[in-house]
Image (cartoon, rainbow, N blue to C red; front, side):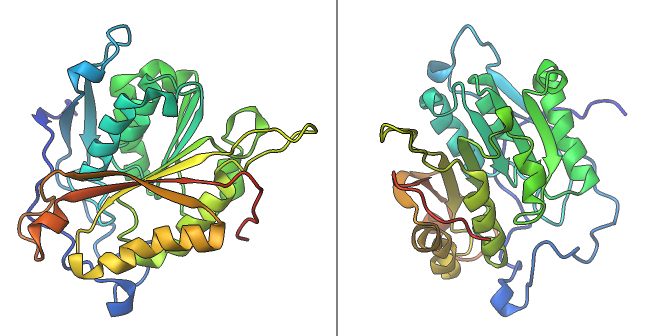
Length: 295
């Protein structure tokens, strides 16, 4: 099949999240195959993300990132989320976050932050999403369109991952046998309230812990970047429970680093447009003393 015609990146849509009820109102687990999961997808498309010229290193090229998106997916993997675009810009402005480091993205969908991590010289990038063959193959296609050599040398790896399950398999993808990553990326995932347990288990076991050497020094551990929008304003408190639980249960420190109005993702959804159109970004880090994992 010929490559789909490229379009400019758009964050609007006519089918939003207002009907994606929370588990408390009957939505249940997002990782239970929804009705219609195995139906044929509409035609896929390519969207182009334009990196901000002032943030692009002229030596690295890749001023545009082309993203192949499925025409539809029941787990919302066919969208280029505003949180992903906002974090991509943030990452371009703070390249040191990933330079020379290992990166793991959860729920990558289009995979934009992973690609920006790779172009900004991350040592290894593991791009994951729900292990649906169409979704994972689509991410591989996107990586191949932009940086095929990184797939070949395995500096970028694409794999399926159901949050909180088969964590040992993902640990083996970290470089140098360290079983954890320097940087975790979670963009527009926390609206899946029923999956907070799995996400927290994943962060607990896949983000590097602080280390202490014989002299009392050591590394400060990894970082997780959690960017999201309150797509359903009436459930904003439940969105924020992920951050609160990360602090309480994992012992992480949370710092708000971004609050940016981008416009709404889904025009026809109900609720305050300013709330639905604002991206919030948090950086989660471990304190210097080691903490317990969630089993």
